[in-house]
Image (cartoon, rainbow, N blue to C red; front, side):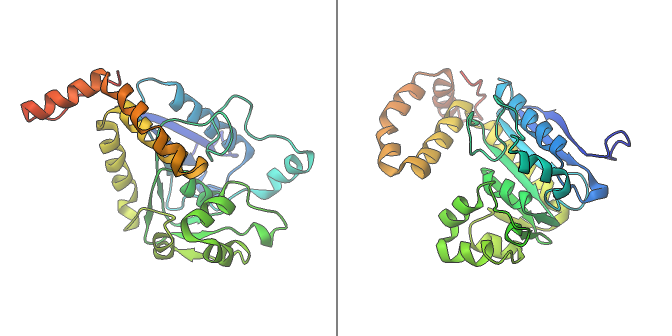
Length: 266
């Protein structure tokens, strides 16, 4: 897919594959460096995904061999100094940090250079597939700013304080195997297989019962953000609600009839 000459500031290209909403980062001539325009378009894409009842899972991936070189910092400097909000009110935050929060899972496919915001998007995704050629970093401390896309929280949660600080306070680069060891990504595959593998995972998620998928994700996020007791307290209520759905009936019928279920999200 070639970038349009009419989009020097890049763009986010979207398409539907059944119940999957595919979002492609399209600025390859600048290593997919993010501009404010691209951030707004990505927030709009996440919002479209969230609001479309036919979409069950999102897939975020790059155009070209690199995920992103990070922020096109000169284009963001004035916005930061003025304290402007990049993501418009009411749109879904692609980092999944601020309201309104998304309810649907996202799979991400990263390869090549995956710097700063790329690392943050990997941590924000529900499932991250990385190429063996991935190069990650959070270099903000070398630019006089702080990473605000979630790594100060998520890296600590997944890798522990010491491991997180070794990367966040130095801005050191790290590879895909390190990201896998520290639980920043779920799977590492050859770069030419990254998008296909991520799409295969997204298809398996899309084939599951949508209400059960969203409830499972919501409960896991609750455990992370509110603690295990809050999540456990929701077990019985959630399963009572799910057990009354058409999808639960279809799941039982498919089990009895020894066939694949056909869930409707009802």
